[in-house]
Image (cartoon, rainbow, N blue to C red; front, top):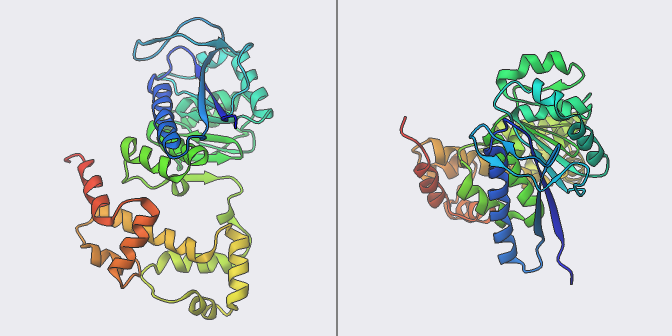
Length: 331
């Protein structure tokens, strides 16, 4: 059987942040290594550096990068990363009309675009973000609003997702998107491995940080929305889903069907994920015992809580706390 290839394009231009390119490469390669270790037929990454022309690019760190090809010769990628700039993006945008046109063309052909910081402006300039959500570096928010009034800027979100376009306001947010993409390509084990080694576990996961256009949690079923809010504010409840349905005057069968239709996930899994994420925050930011945290998120049996936590994250609550605390800097 022929091994599938996932084609990655890294966009290069002068004055870009070198880490905007090196971080995706190193994280993706780490995910690839774990993915192949788990499954010999897992996809291989094929990475290409692309620029307006084939001249060497000077980064903010004074590291010169040599592109593999120019936009006219570049192959169609599955994913394209657009790096952030350490300066006002306007001058760079004016110098790269071919690159901007290329981004629009490859998106139309199915490429997923990931822009970091001020690199998001290249996508905005192409018109791809018109009437869609986006975020960017906080320093350029007001300028972005003036330059691209048709874009629905979400400055309070570090990540936005609109179909096949991702925007990251910072390098940390970019790292979270990369973990999300590794999950899509190589699965949960590879994504967790990369997150543990590259990311900062105290941050909320990708799904909680993003603004997702048309997200299922912005559905029109008002009763299910009320139930979700109740779940979010009553994590320590020991009610069964049948009790919860009865409390809101709906049958168990109807509740199960409507919740899945509205959210794309069953109610039990949704509530469990809320509890685990809250437990992660408590493990990282409090000195509560594992048993106390278990009670706080509605699990009276600590061993059951530990099993669920390990199944979800691949590590025990105790080991997770040790790992996270090691990554904290002294204030």
